[in-house]
Amino acid sequence: MKNKMKTMRKKLGMTQKQLAMECGVARQTINCIENDKYDPTLELAFKLSKILKVKVDDLFIYE
Image (cartoon, rainbow, N blue to C red):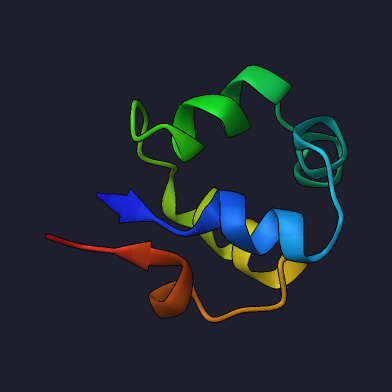
């Protein structure tokens, strides 16, 4: 599953570490999601979309 997380995160001026802390995950988790090496759980996907102020559908692209 592809995503636009890095772009959205940078638009808000957030670091991976800041985003990870707000979501309650490790920075490495954010890195793996951004690099398409890990698909987040549904709960984490919703947390990410809320923090990044976008809809889940706008953040993740199912191919």
